[in-house]
Length: 163
Image (cartoon, rainbow, N blue to C red; front, side, top):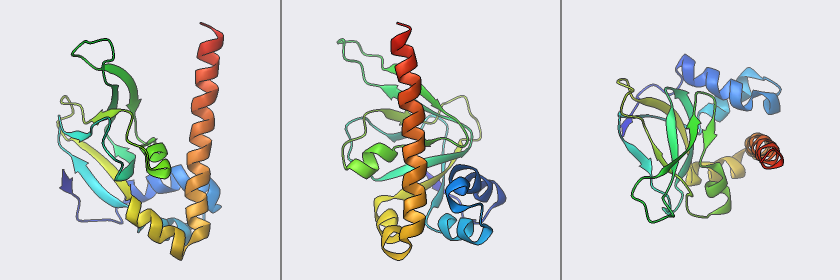
């Protein structure tokens, strides 16, 4: 994992605006404040971001590239099952972060992406600071996570209905 020195880069700011802007009324100043709580990180191709079962340390917003979420094998096999492409604008790890439960998926940066994967990381500690200093922004983050969960449940319900 390599840290990116520039926090206020245009792609990172654009992604915060895209992900959280609806609940910040697209206020430019608030977007900048929220961005300051995230740490930009680049994962090298093939890097394991976290393993299923690890205690949560952060949630991620993908800025450039993609991550792969894998479900550990339960059938005695040695290969994980593919769960999700985590594409630019998507958030992962937030349910474990908020509920203080271990990550359920292993998340990796695919080996085929030569440039790696650029993400914005929100650690548990930084989210706690956000909640203390700016509860209105912490609420916007929570509302974004709830919206994502609602979409996930809607899609899963549709899949079950068609099974």
